[in-house]
Length: 142
Image (cartoon, rainbow, N blue to C red; front, side, top):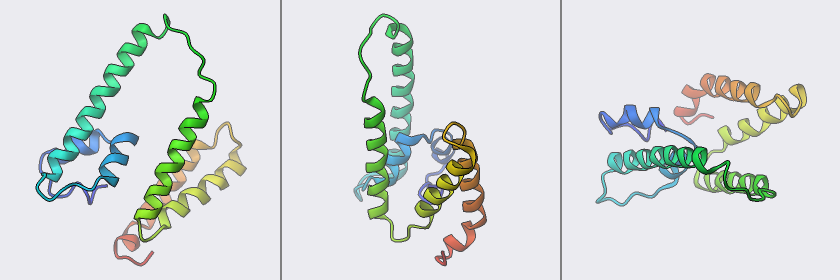
C-alpha cells in the first residue's frame, strides 16, 4: 500500500496511520476514475471509515447492553467476507507470493502454536518474511 500512497503529499501520513482492514480493502481494490484525485479519494475513504468505527463503537457502547439479539452464525459471515476479499485480491494480482506466504506461514504457526495462540506468531512471521523479501518482490523477482 505504501506504493499506492506515493504522490499523495501530506495525506500519506494519515493514510498510513488510518489504515485498517476496511480502508485497505477499498483503497486496494477501487478503480478510481481518471478525473478523481487519487489522494483525496483514499483520504476520504479512510476518514469515513474512522468516523464509522467511532460512531459504531460509541453507539454500541451506549445501546449494546440494552438491545439483545442472536449473533449465532455471525462468525461464518465474517469468515466468508474475508475469503471473498482474499479471492478478489488473488484474481487482481499477477503474482501470489504474499498470499501464499500468508497461508503457509499461518498454517505452520497453527500447527506449532495451536488454534488458541497462533495469530500473533503468524503475523510476526508474515511481517518478517515479507520484510526480508521486500526488495526482491519490488524488483519483480519473487
